[in-house]
Image (cartoon, rainbow, N blue to C red; front, side, top):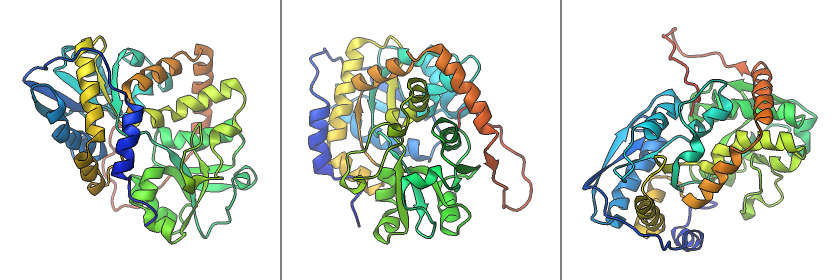
Length: 364
């Protein structure tokens, strides 16, 4: 096995450096607090939320009861709308949300009832780093080939399918995007049986965790890091990153918006104007949680990756993303509409014709 999902001891030391102790005053929270998870029960976000709730309690002053409440809807927009307009600001309510929904006001060409930079960012449990991978039997070995030869990529619907389609327009890649795969397991089967040649839907920690057999047995090749900056991992040394191919400032801003949900990852957030002492309390407790060896071992056993980003860093990042000029946002939306026309919808090979589900604005 190339490596585990993460090394608990190493991560604990890194977290200590990333999250210095804060001098801000802390407070005792209400006896019961509610953690809203912006997705359905049983999914990946739900696993992160419930595991964190189990270990977070001991680090909160007074050890309040933590009630986990699922609030799925509209790809996370429902839970963020609640957090923005309804949640108590005294620390009684906080949320784990789908990162894509935090960028809906930029992507979706209609009013969204919240202003993401105004949220209170507490921590992200896991910064994501997606990779462009291909199956070993394909003719692709180097990044330069994707600018010369068509590559057939499988993708889920929504933002992840838009990214490779937008790469064709931004940097001149030759991706043929097949959208509509339901989950990475179905996509893995499509890659393995040759239905598609590769995908950008796999995050590096998932590849080195749940898909280690692909790496160990050299079943895949990593062609490019789908990131703005290179990932600091020896296994990725020499693998180019997409950010290095975009030099035009406007195109670079567009790419950064499209990839922004990777930085936000799996964030815990509070409502706008959350009481400063409650903010300090949650940030301190969550930082202690992600350094807790017992929590890290439990996360590893559950195949949950932990690659944290501080609330302070997320706050700066969100303000920067939302300061991108409106003219660039309009250009991006126009380009997305054009890029969507090039995405081929995968034909459902299932039996029968069931009733279709309502499409969310920002699928996870």
